[in-house]
Length: 296
Image (cartoon, rainbow, N blue to C red; front, top):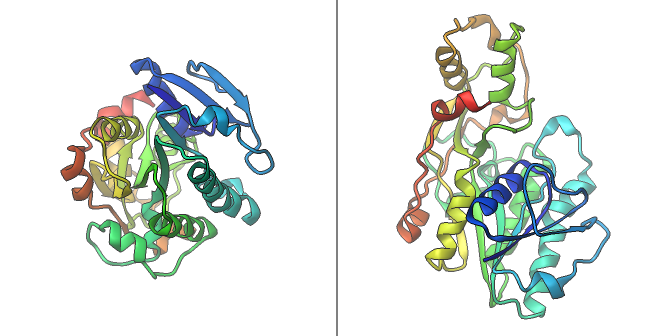
């Protein structure tokens, strides 16, 4: 199989590349920086904001995966221009280009459970719920992801296009400022922890399960469409922090909660219902947080 990943050295793109290495798939990478931490067959240096892609080579791929995004990590302070270009304009342009040149393979893009916005409903959301949500969007990342999802749901094409709504992805090698590595690092270094009240609920999926899911979709000839990828764990932030402390045999200091402010606290409950995808290809996440804490 020939796999092309658009975007290098991102958390998700690296996980997909490592999976391709294990499966011995031909792997072509496009991005600003040369890939590190895994093998690849070809690398093409591309600035997606300014450069045109070499579609003559790309369309030979069985699967093309758009693994580029901006605005995911608020601490990076990325510009609105970058967020809307990489999350909307570039993937829309690629979709239209693949359509015009008669691509016959599979194209993969990603949406996010954060597209639900500031909902207080406590239930697992369907694809339709996420796609049609009108709850307030707390940031440009949420708005831009909504724009891409609604385009994908509407445009006409002959190739296979899977758009996967994903929950919070986690795993070793993720950004050290994110919740799980931050907590583990602070415990190990005996540093004081700072969190919000910790009552917001998030669904989590181990990053290594996403490429397996894509492979399963290809093997089972999943039809074009929008699909939720349901994670195994759904916890509040307080529950996640508590589980990490318990796993590491460290007492949890209660005063660590309520000392931090974040823009996403208005999104009280974010979880996906993956029934549609499970019924189509049999995918069900099997790895839980406590299975991989020691890998961090």
